[in-house]
Length: 318
Image (cartoon, helix red, strand yellow):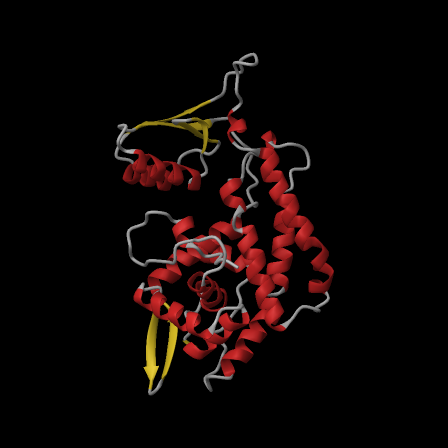
């Protein structure tokens, strides 16, 4: 599993207030540790005994040594802060990390809830870089992708959304070349000359990703709703479904439903996600609390599994 709270993907190139683990193919102990700590202490920043974090990581298949190394590195990176009581240490999220993780979680939780109709206008960004600035060109393309744009042509990127202050600020601070942004409606041209801006996205591939997600998780819903998934299995499944679902806002930035093929599966995928993630919150929380009590006599009331609605509200509060 990979952390659903991978801020270097969700917030690339931010000033380094905290340095979260870089996303890599496959699982990493650091990203999984961030996921597990955030999933159950994000709202309260509760202290967790280091042994309990290690135990959670071991349940996820991370070795004891790798788990301890991951916790130490997260502390050095200012994602976790530590406290000691004699021989024993505890950790919690730093304020800066919790703020960034709340924003990323809200972005995921709100995905698929847009109701306002599309106004028919596209935002276009055209840019130019010197030939020797290929690295910066790649950085800008990555930023545009995160902001919901896609390449209609090599140096002309499009988005159906109006530019907000965040988009303007991030593009201004990212680019060292020249750039032009404007809003316009498409004028249809006869084929083969005309290209619809929506073709900048591979809708067939996106639909396949949605369908794969739905086919994997929908058959599990009766067992989850019947309370038949508990313990470490609930924690594992909850992390896994978040890891899979959090990718959709990047590949389908809530493209206007007016332009989507019939029966676009975004809403169905969201319903499946919410049912799994929220449906497993209570048993996963019980398991994490029970595990923590093995290493601490302190009350576990601040260990709380958040729902998708709480994630969305937390983003508004921050």
